[in-house]
Image (cartoon, rainbow, N blue to C red; front, side, top):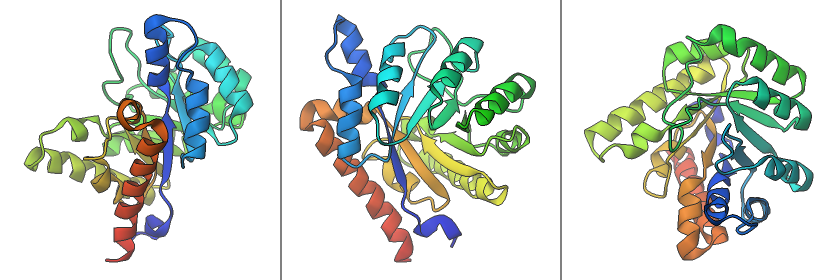
Length: 253
């Protein structure tokens, strides 16, 4: 069993889509900062927010307020652009996750090409690290991308779980799960802290949470949607329980 298996698995709650609902009509309600504070009180270990180029959900003022009011870490997701770098360096959040971004996409469609984009990414990782931010790269579960993260001196990677979540239960999903399991184990072997996220819900979180070398899951859209029916606190607490149950099952083996 891997050494990290007994560690508590952290839950990062993404509040982007609280802002999506707010922006659908304009105005101030619902407030993603209020959601972040409620998430912190409900068992979240950190808050994730993606400041996109087109500001389709999270706004610059949201980031300023989150930095001012949160008592738990903020993970700022951003594209590797000069504009986003300047914003991150101004606020200096606990963590910055560099993600791919295409203007026409509805949501992030895959991992960043850390290997192919090495020379472009290197100064971003370096400057963010120098500012005291813990830099992570959102990548596919692929050894080449993991090796690239090491060469870029990024201490953390987040594995894209979207294909796993979208796959029909059965051999296809199991194949995606195996890739994530293998990548998480390899990440530990080469000295990376490994996180995972994208598309996770109650039905898909268990097998991912049971991967012993993962340290953190980032979950947002599902929790915001579920909150419509049961409330944000209850949705987060159930997700936390499912994660704990999956992680506890490891120690019983």
